[in-house]
Image 1: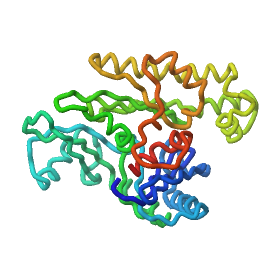
Image 2: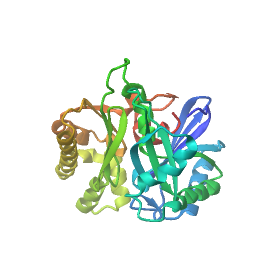
Image 3: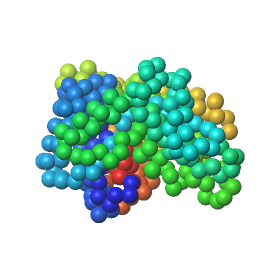
Image 4: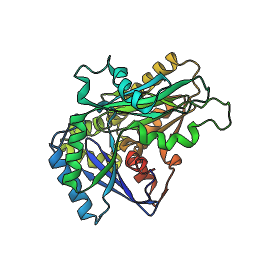
Length: 331
């Protein structure tokens, strides 16, 4: 992002994260628990109420910045790598919706279409794009939310965009003629674990597992009889070294096995891939027993996404791992 002063916002199923950038430096990360009933299955239930919640987050932290960039979950949009004949902007505007004809079952006019041009090093006379389609209703709802929060949304982008901001300096070929490397980014979220794949410099796909780190909190609740909210706090703070219990080791092993299977599937379909590192972030990135399980099963170097922060900041590594996508929205 070109702004020296702005907000980066990422709303998860359980926590909202707001990165505060001022004078070209990310100075703070605001994190707050989303009230019960505002989110369901990673979808916002009430945009008015979410806007009020964000407004209160900013107010109690004395933040008056208005410009904001919002990260949307991948599952709320359609993404495609598209190759078209060379054409002008007006022709592209007409043709782009047809590239989603096989994916969108509703009326095409109900969607907004946008794109980013991919540099064409091969000079093949074609136009290479990353195209996105999002429902007008969804965009309008987010604008309603922003108005309630007294902020101005400068951009609304899918979750792969802030992750690309982290990888951009590495994903580009270091020398002309070199083939860009492949990268994978692991999102250890509460309700789902996702792996975002970037193949030869381009975003390719996100594989999502309907099983997240929150399953560990649920298991604690089952074993101890604690309320789920208390169990989540116990998990995050490792109260009484609870992360090392045998029953949580079963949960972590299951999660790691699922991650391994996704990686094996990718390797099978991309036999010539150049993956060496698996960058990780999210709430689960703070759970060392889980990371150790992943290291044992996945034959890649497990690395913190905090190594790739491309903006000046005054944040701890823990804050970067928790708020990675919000921070990426300011880069």
